[in-house]
Amino acid sequence: MTPSDVKATLSFSDGSPSMELPIYKGSVGPDVIDIRKLYGQTGKFTYDPGFLSTASCNSTITYIDGDKGELLYRGFPIEQLATNCDFLETCYLLLNGELPNVSQKDEFVARVSNHTMVNEQMQFFLRGFRRDAHPMAVMTGLVGALSAFYHDSTDINNPEHRQIAAIRLIAKMPTLVAMAYKYSIGQPFIYPKNDLSYTENFMRMMFATPCADYKVNDVLVRAMDRIFILHADHEQNASTSTVRLCGSSGTNPFAAIAAGVACLWGPAHGGANEAALNMLEDIQRNGGVEKIGEFISQVKDKNSNVKLMGFGHRVYKNYDPRAKLMRETCHEVLTELGLQNDPMFKLAMALEKIALEDDYFVSRKLYPNVDFYSGIVQRAIGIPVQLFTAIFALARTVGWIAQLNEMIGDPEYKIGRPRQLFVGSPKRDVKPIGQR
Image (cartoon, rainbow, N blue to C red):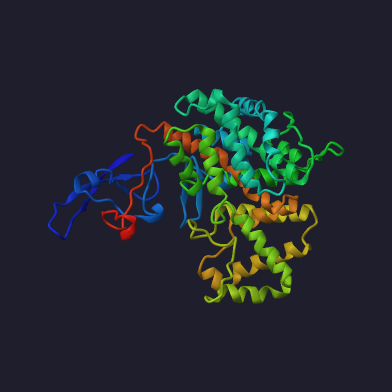
């Protein structure tokens, strides 16, 4: 962090002494006012529900400019990474700060491939769940349970433990997601094959059966790989902040990532692509494309409770750069599978057209977001809607780990301890029960 020559002065109208606050400049993005000494010098806290104006850390991993519609991983634009790199190259970048050369990539891929199997006892653990359990309920349990199987990598303060835990988590998440899926549909688990790429392996574990092996379709594998890249990290969002806060207590990496999975489950976060598909299915059930005008009217009506899911973004006030890439992939996949005339996909494309042309949506910058397109792509590939968020967790695992490792390595890191504005009852005495 570079301190700025400019300082902020905080003054009080009640005559309390003013104080100077240092300002730090990032390499890009807004300056930050350092308030760490505020409570010590004034006895006052800041109040910022949701931490929307508070930087909780300094980071070198991911940068978002919501107004420009820009997303950078370690300085590289997401458009270039999604076009020129595969997911494991992106993982290497997020973990190590630079893209790998050929030998570094080969070594990293080999290390990840060597850890794709999970302990056989995980199958018995999985069988304790109901088959109709939500995959995210299963994943929260499975990821947390990894710490019970891999005792040799649970010390968060040991760099070697963190490194092997990172490789294990990245390698085993596809296996766990595929196992959760196979369990839910009553099919046998498919073991990983280390001669396949990361994403080919995942698709095979999802869709192969002992009686019919999975035939790799390069278009679908590339689409899935792109989904992984676009979801790999997204700065200090709710689940990443959860992983950092959880890890700040010194808990093991598997527990911290399980906390991230639990947070991602929420419909306002990782569940958004599931919500977008559920919305499309509701419109389809109620008349489909022919009734889309009525649906849009309800969305515009302030008095209706109808929400448009998969459009707009809390951070991007412009077109989400990931959505542009996913839109291209979406059309490639639908064409490859001959689904352009499928009623559900025709409905999705009609809704997209309205959102990109209607003044109501354009003026509010309610563009289709990455969740809208990734949901359509996953459904086309054959992934059930309930599994979407688990796949998001699979992709985001590397970002969570990179952020967790960065926090542990930061000499300024402390256990997280947000403050509060207390508005409850002041101190009072307990009366005997007969007098209450």
